[in-house]
Image (cartoon, rainbow, N blue to C red; front, side, top):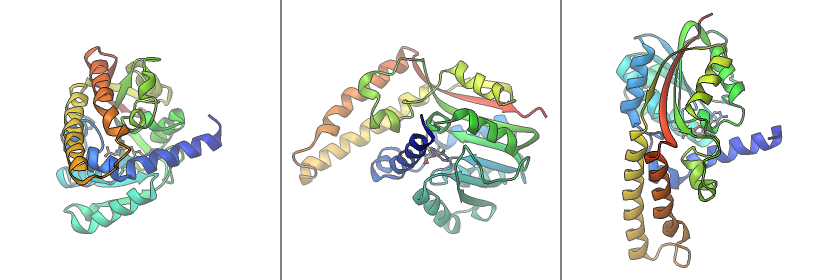
Length: 267
Ligand SMILES: C[S@@+](CC[C@H](N)C(=O)[O-])C[C@H]1O[C@@H](n2cnc3c(N)ncnc32)[C@H](O)[C@@H]1O
């Protein structure tokens, strides 16, 4: 990808996750496992009260706010989408834990942050989306203090196994299009100078999120029939059940999964 193509990819990705459709399908916690998996990862990372934590690609800020509330830590969220960043900032006023949290608009591949400032960095369901993953991983290492930990959770996909029908918007929404396999993530972390401490298979969470998306699409479909919404173009709703069945099969066959990794900056 040329730098211009990468810039377009980042902007399109941010627009997609800020869209009403994404919000309707995934809610405000946009990764498999929701806040329970966020909390599990924070536990594995050893986040302590008072720590300074970076949430890379923080979306609408749900994980950052929850982490600060549960762990009594300070959190900085960095997010590429302008709308998502504004929404996250609005939530600071309303939500418990908001005083310890801030949100900055920025690119994970060129962080607008000081070196060595963070006790921990986390990145949920987003590394798979970054066009230049090596640049993002090296920014994580730069942001971490020596001994600081990185928690990464993301979609894993066996190389070359993405079916053609999932190479479009739905595949992008499900973080499939540019996902690595498990060894690819381990190589990425190690190439950035991080030492892997732990890896955990959370692939069952993909099945759970598919159940939820399917239920919401069912409701949406019934609503659109009742109201006549989208008359004449039901193609996305028509295709969705087949596409979801394809994703389910990939999970069952062990081709697609969701993994948690924890690594340390040994410097
Ligand atoms: C699947 S969502 C996950 C959001 C959040 N981490 C969560 O789990 O709720 C992916 C997020 O990555 C953001 N993103 C994509 N590319 C980015 C980049 N280069 N820098 C910062 N954020 C980025 C998107 O705008 C989107 O909000």
